[in-house]
Length: 154
View 1 (tube, rainbow, N blue to C red):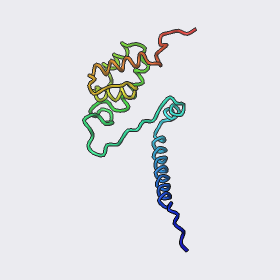
View 2 (cartoon, one colour):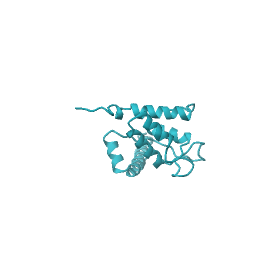
View 3 (cartoon, rainbow, N blue to C red):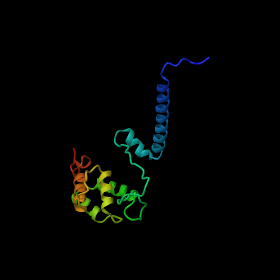
View 4 (spheres, rainbow, N blue to C red):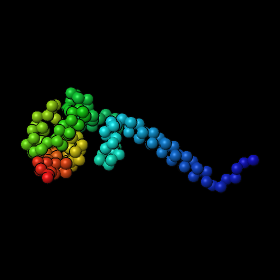
């Protein structure tokens, strides 16, 4: 005996497809969350961090740097993360400028652009290296984490 056709088999196929896509999405998300350190995961859960989509290059990479290991071409991701942390801890414009002028590894413009993005600093393709450095310095020294730097609270 055949099932009567109620015209909703297309809906069932769409629901199954959507369910399959959601399963795949959650699987990929779980894998990526598993790559985070405990500290990074805690920051995300506390609302002090966010996840960001970064597309994977299928063809040859663009002219800019795409996640190179340390010592290859420009600064690596680890070096940029370290520099970001040191910049955020800087107490003055001079200290931040010194960190950018004398980094452990040579910074190319693409590295500075990536560092700016890590710090949520808006840069444009027309910004010069010096302009990017100035924007970074303004952000880290005048940012909320340094709002009360040097102020003694009683």
